[in-house]
Length: 112
Length: 113
Image (cartoon, rainbow over the protein chains, first blue to last red):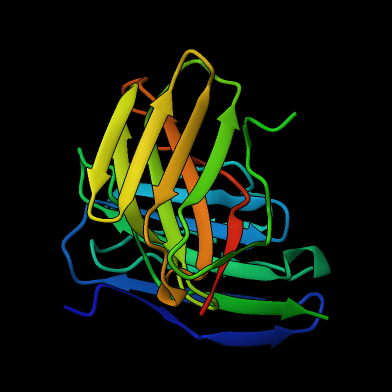
């Protein structure tokens, strides 16, 4: 099993550009989440999904969109990148009813 | 005030030392407590998971929860250079249907050979 995979590993954007961060898992997990990790802030939940077709907002959803058309994939879209979105982004998945989250390796995003 | 407080460190100890990592929290509804280990430029991985108060041991690691003091700890015995990482605490309330975990900011640990 590859677990949770994320692409790209690194990305540099200019202010106003849009892009999609990809996340995929091969463990047939129902729940998937996107977090951002910033110095001194810890991991903060952006959006999450409890199954295909079902998504909801987390703590810091503004400027981001998600969709979940399949169990495996959970892309995160930045609509119009801002310097405040410079961060490390982690995707995570877990099986319903269990608290063990499996994290991907992260995407380091810089917005100039 | 943050819901979960964690000293960022760095904490430097010699190889073989006993390490104590701690988090305090303010929400008495938290019932599930987790410790994650995050190596540099990697994603977090779950290390320990406990429910409510008490101790849980797994090899060299012991997780301790004191709900009366709103305080959780992770002890590492016989620390090794390979334990050098950032340790994140995380917690979740017992409310059914909640999917939101609150993470501490992490404590950076360096174990010196």
